[in-house]
Image (cartoon, rainbow, N blue to C red):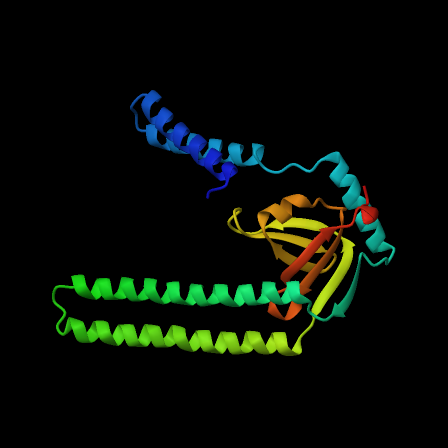
Length: 229
């Protein structure tokens, strides 16, 4: 699903391009002018639709900076054993990786075998296809075994990290539909969009993560008494 802001910018750019090509009289400068208008409208649409920081958020961020400058901790961390909910989340992730590996193997095999099939001047197509199937499937199987052993070992010897603190920043990296991060002081955690939208900078939060596996989120809850608002 595409981000609404991205779609709006694309619509503005395309509309400007086609309208300028239609309305600007034919001349040597028609295409450069049309191109310039399109770029200009794209930049303007990007600037006008950017996320604006409210006065309240500026106040909260200034307060956070002040607390940091005073040397105050904005988070408290401690390790804890996994509970049943944590193990359920971890093994759910393990099962998801299995399906990702299977799907990846099917897609790569299908693409390469399909290319071999439509290559008219290639001899022994069946042999090439069988070789590709064995190599690709074997490669994905090796990755699956290696990853699962490493992941299970991390669960066996590891513990979760419980953090209670203040949301000091929110950010979106890359594709705005799936790379949302909450930052609690120096800790950055990838979260789903609905959790990202649940919190604002300055909110109190308790969050449980599995640090050895890219700060994997296990649990989160808002702490109203810690809010800086």
